[in-house]
Each structure stands twice: as C-alpha cells, then as structure tokens.
Length: 139
Image (tube, rainbow, N blue to C red; front, side, top):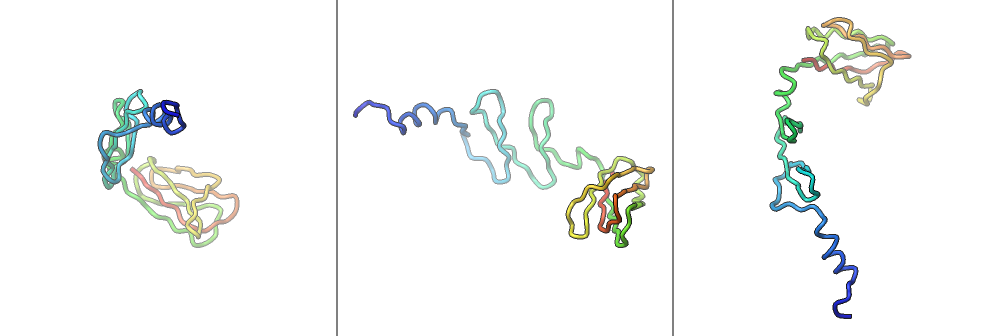
C-alpha cells in the first residue's frame, strides 16, 4: 500500500542515519577512531612504519615508537641445554627491560619467574628444565 512503512523504508529512514559515516575515504593503513561524543564523529588516523597509536592530551594520534621508548636495543639468549634456570647476561646496563620467552617451537611461554638480578643480568626460572630462547628489549 502506498505510504505504508516497509522494513526497507524503516531502515532507510530510521536506522541508516544512526550508522557512522565518513565525509571522505581514509588512506590505506589507517585506523578508524571515534572522535567525539556523537556516534557519527569518525576519522581515520594513518599509521606509517614504526608508529603506534597514543592518546596525547585527549587526542588519539600516530606517534613514532622511538619517540616514546627512546633508544632501545635487544639481546637474544639461546638456551640449547635443558635447564630450569636460565641466566641471561644481556649487558644492557638497564633494568628497564621487556622479556619474551619462547620454546623450541617459537611459541611464547610463561616461565615461573623472571628476576631482574642486576642491570646486566636477568634470571628466568621454570618449574622443569626447558630449552628455547629469550628476547630481551632494554631501554
């Protein structure tokens, strides 16, 4: 019947205006963010190589990772002999470290304990002897 609402007209007139839209397309490798309280306030933030998203003074921005972390370096420790205790001598002169432990199949594993022994040494302890590697990123 003419003038009678159908599911399609209801969608076009009621639901579609609620959907988020952008006034222009965003570049490839952009992240869509909601910028404001209204549901339709979207924008794209372009991420280039070596950048991460950060909220700075209430605005989400692309930031160079090196600007956030400063100078970083890394050390890879290979544990080829099974041991319940791995002593990692990274010589990074820092206890500001991130440690990722991987088994022999390159799967991330969680050791029983990671101790920052001193600014050059990290001790990784397992419940039973293990082999694999540990990657230490220090800054």
